[in-house]
Amino acid sequence: MQNQLNIFEGPDAIKTFLDPGKNPYLPLVELPSTLNPYSGDNVRIFAKLMNMLPLGNVKAAPAFNMIEEKFLSGELEGVNRIVENSSGNTVSSVALVARHFGINNIQSYVPAEISWHKLLMLLFFGIEPIVNVEPENPVEGDPQSGVSKARADAMKDGVINPGQYHNDANPRAHERWTAEQIWQQTSGNIDIFCAGLGTTGTIIGNSRSLKSKKPSLRVVGAMRAPDNYVPGVRTEKLLKMVGFDWRKHVDHIERVETAKSYRLSLEMSRAGIIVGPSSGLAFAGVLQYLEGLKAENRFDEIRNGKTGNITCVFPCPDGPLPYLDEYFKYVDPTHFPAIQNEELLLNKP
Image (cartoon, rainbow, N blue to C red; front, side, top):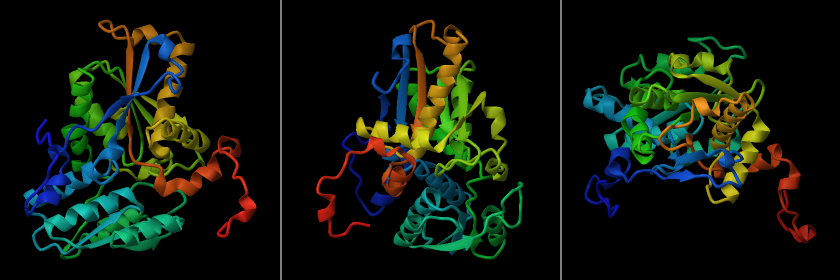
């Protein structure tokens, strides 16, 4: 590990700080038995805290890699504007990285149903939102989608579209940093990797790298169940907009519901792993997959012969704060304490 004192200084200090390769390894934290119902079966479940990247979310890694690769290839010469399709973490990370490569004008296509809170976050980071009504039944390349409109804008002089849904620098970031860290942190003893399916960069990059080292690894993709909402993750219908051939990198798919994603995120946060709803979705994907294996008495076909354990890893993309009000919408009220003397509040919504 380089820079053990974790100091960044000099004229390019922030740019160096934003480089995932110049930071200490992100924590890999084992969940206790209170969160892991399969601990008695010698199943170990680890959370990879991608929310502890410098920008606080998993998109910081592909954002840096996409911009750096375009800089090294000369594609940023003459560029004065970046446009992306994103309503949150990706474009925020791209904007904060791009400014250190000399580009300050950032625009983003956002869906018409974007929350006001997320819109304010984009404005806070100096990003110009372009509201777009997304097609109800999208197909790949649909010209009415924000993805296609961002790509079309990039045909103009001085404009680029990083293209998180089709730029292989997205999954390459996870090959370069995330998977290598997980492999070393588990000493190669990883049996199940599960990630949420959004742009699919996380699952493709980790699958390519980890399976090249251990072909028997099971890769589980967690997607939103139909008509369920979890920020940053897509339903099977919405995954049609993704340009990557992600299915060939996934061994099994779990469909996860909104309420379960938020509840598991809440439980992890209360245990001290403060993560958001997409982390809860990935964790749910692990638990659902394990439930199926146990019901079919298939644990032994995955169990590591050297350790006697089954080791699972899932990435945690971000924290809960941008979605705080949503927990009170999707989690049963019995999970929250009552407010004493509530009638005395002066600013009750």
